[in-house]
Image (cartoon, rainbow, N blue to C red; front, side, top):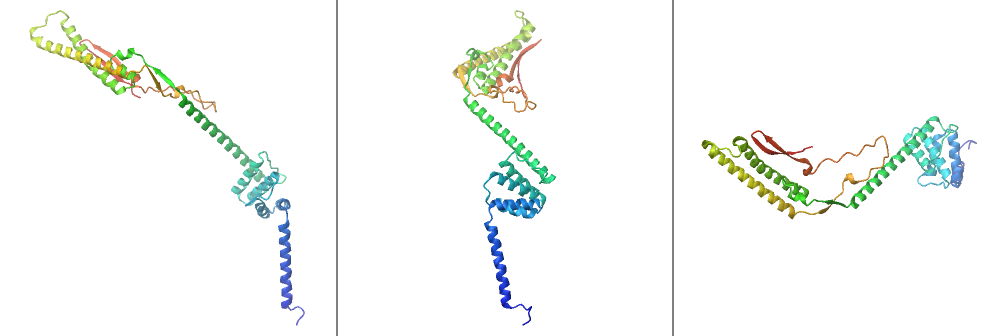
Length: 311
């Protein structure tokens, strides 16, 4: 057999030798402590072997952290983030920087070991964390303030005192005071129409014929008819007025507890003086405030005008 020929025995010896080397290498790696692995991460990063640094750092941090010291964890996250950045994985780098800053917020990178781009991304991550923390704090303060206002409003016990004399005021004043706006509008409209018609006819006849002047015979039937309408309208006015007084007295309560509104709440804290605005006046929502009764007098007639303020 030629001297250089490969025999089966020689092949078996080579395979055995390779297996031994692999086992020894595996045993050496497996026996390395996390601190030794972290040192290897540092060495790979200093040599700009970012792929090896990424793999080793990932092994130390995921799926479970193999480093016990906070400083070692920060360093591993920073080196993994910088290696991610250098290999084009910007989003992953920012995530690792954020994890490092969560453990050590005052951490600062220097250009002695890290590139300018990695330092810039690290600083941007710090600013993002600070902005998010401030925003979350403002949201928590706002939620706490809303909860405080809600509890304060529930604790309000506002008592409204109502005047007994308002029950005898015409045009549905008693109903409006009793928070019965529909009835108040009906009484106000009915009494206004009836009273206005009666007073208007009276003033018309008094202005045309005087109080004691004789009425021409040809105009007597018309005048008598107007007087009948005047008297009937007057009776209707007083009947509606009496009905309104009785209805108002039946529903009258001298003191009523009502729900507090925003005008009774304390002022909100000024979180930003440039954005605070004075509290706006509460709009008129009660029909009693929006309904206006105005007398209307003309040379030959008189009446009462009802206006409802709209907005």
